[in-house]
Structures are given as C-alpha cells and as structure tokens.
Image (tube, rainbow, N blue to C red; front, top):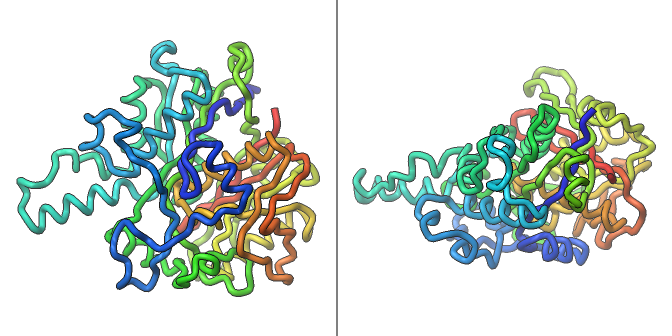
Length: 402
C-alpha cells in the first residue's frame, strides 16, 4: 500500500503567520480571540472573533490577483506558497498533470460578495465587479491555487463545514494512491464580515460572552458556544518513497481516515461520531492504546461536548488518552480548522509536546484528560484528529510519525 507523507506546511492563523510564529504562540498559550475590528459588530449579540492580524496581501501576491480575490483566497494563496517553499518544491517544474490540489470550503468568499452586493444595491449593476462571478465561489481557492502554480493534476473541493479539512486531506491521499506525484490539501476560510456574521449567528452556536478569556470553553461546565475565526493551513502530500528520494523533510504520515454522517435531529438515533473514530483507527491499523493524543472538535455546546467525550471514552477508556483543543486560541476556523489541527499534530509529533487548551477546564463528569493552560511534554507518535460540521458531518484523521 502506498504511504502518503506530509513534506510541507503553510499556516495562517489568528495567532501567527507561518509555521514558526503559529507554533510559538500556540505553545505559549497566546489568545488570538479579540473584539472584531473588520466591521462594526457593536449591534450584534456576539462581537468576538479570531482574526488574522498582520497579513497584507500586497506583500505576498502580485497586484493582478488582488482585484479578483476575496480575503479568504488571498490568505489561501499565501499559505500555498509557504507550503511549497517549506516542502522545497515548485509544482510548475513537475511533469504535467502530476500535481493537484484539494481544498475544503464552508462558505466561499463572503467579504467579496458582500462588497459587490452593496455596490449592486447602492449604485447599480454596472458597478458590480466581473470577478464576482467566481470570487465568491466555494471552489475558488482550489481554482486560484491550481492556476497560480500551473497544477493540472487531480483537483477537488470538499464542502462539509469544519469536517472538510480532514476530508480534503483524505481525498488528496486517495489521489496519491492513484498515482499523483504530489498534492496540496487542507483549508483556509474567512467570513468575518457583516453578511457572514449573520450566517454565523444563525447557527445558534456562537458564544455571546464579551470576555475573550471566557467566550470559548469546550468541555467546560459553563460552555455556551464557540467563537468564529479565520485562517487555516495547507499541507503538501507526497508518496513516501518519492519524498525520501529527493531528501524531503517528512513531518509525518497520513495513516487513516473515516467519515460518517449523523442522523437528522429528532430521529432518536445516536451520533455516528464513535464509528468515525473507530473507522479511522482501523484504516490506519492502529490500536487505541497506541494513540498518544486526540485533537478534539470542541464544539463548546454542552450536548455536543457530551457526545464527543462519550465517543472518545468509548474508544479509549475514560481519561486514558490526553485530549486537547488548541483552537481555543484561534476560534473555530470552519473549513480551515482541521487542517490547522493537522499542522499542530504534526508539530507535536516533531517536538514531543501536546499544545494546551487555554481558559477551559473539563467538567469532571465528562471523564476527559484535557491538557490545559501549559503544554505537556511527552513522546507523540500517533495523533487522532476529530472534526464535526454543521449538518451532521463527522470526520476523523490519524497522523503518525514517519
């Protein structure tokens, strides 16, 4: 069986631009959640978000791309370049059709779409950019990345909300197994504008707390919802033999994946999250006792937290494996969240440390060994990442040391 490895990381997060800045901030427990500054949120019941700061697209992209791209896509293009640089690869120099890209999406280019709709309403159709036809589209990140890097190999987009990042990485692994030379996969998301904010609030899952330290508290007794964020990560995937032949640094192996769909609300049937966890471990040929850490979904909705804790305890035993939710520092990044968790898991494997869950304390009745406030140093060989998306999507991804 073909082994798929990760040889490059491109990270853009509320806590840092690039792998080094993000990882340093994560291990320091730095909180990237703060009052929204991108628009006036004072009239909304929620006004906190994890915003990417210090990113100026003109510093990273050619001017011709700026008029035709949403903020989300600009971040994705920058992260893609960082990932290729980290891997030491230029896909344009590879054989034609050998390199592809799969991204996850949850909403598309909300900020671009809002601006053009305002132009339509206030000024008329002649003031709407022609680029609106694709800049808002959920597949635009895949399209723009593949065009910029002349990638004509397998492409795709996974739309399963926060579970999408894991699904995208798994789909890229599938393409590697089919013969693709290299794949770029993951997700970068942003919908922090007034139009997108209404969509977030409509979910009924956004915290209304006004203290960044008390707003996003997964597994805590006083959990009352999540904080939205923006950013994510893109990973370079290769077949292991090819990666080693060119002397690539290998962060880890994409060892297993499984996805399930929960039954509709009110059906009386239980969640299938446990099945996703067991399926990913089986796909990786990993026994639960071998897993060193679980990167949790961490919905911060009491009922959903109980379901996740129950699934973890059913698979591993109560308190038997350390769990963490580093997204308490960034907010939930939707399609970018799991890709960022995957980057964190690979860095955990590299450095032998589990990043903390800040501000939260696990409710005793959940039976979880939650790593809080400070990193926990221990050898990490295998990590399981759990993700759920609105609509019943469940996804689990297993990463292991090479």
